[in-house]
Length: 280
Image 1: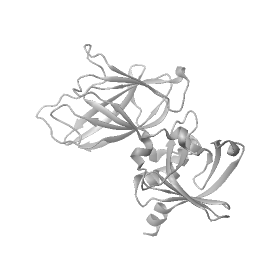
Image 2: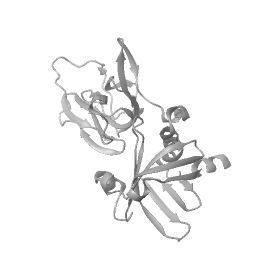
Image 3: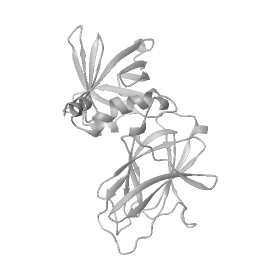
Image 4: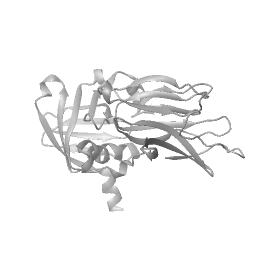
């Protein structure tokens, strides 16, 4: 989780894992889109001079103009993707750094940084029995041991997130669903020939099961940024839950629309990014 820094002073005091006694954290409230039980929420502290602009692709504004104070937020447990920036006035990141962390109920976490030469790294740690442990999660290490959502993220979501050419096709006898970069999906009904398209979002709460939100839209009128700022959980016409995924197939169940709730659809997965890489 590194980024080149814009400038580096002759002497840099690294952020530690403890807050100054004079630092009263700014309370950012609760980030809990998945609706986890209050008792299961975890506390995340954000060190001073740091800002979080997105969590799981959703814009947040966890920063202060003067950056002199730390922040604290309650969050649902699970795997989350943070977009983090650092700026102490003399040293700053040129762009946000993506940091993926696995948060476990019962733990408290702190987002801090370290500087090594011309690189700045983001750290997300928790303390267990007085020992600091990293909560950073390598998405490439996802396996079936982490459940079907983990495999789904690795095989269906990540290829489109990482590369503009990383299209992924889900296909069965009834329809094709093509996932593209920038949160785009395109559906084709094989029986009627009807085509629909729009934006989609994935909710990566591994403790509650993931949700895939499909919102039909004119792609020329609704950017991915505008989509994520809307209430897509309510506006989405389809909410799918990947209940099984082995990397080759995925099974969806649904919580929306109402007439989909009892059904289950199974699709084969074709990752065009991997196919291209294999051929080359």
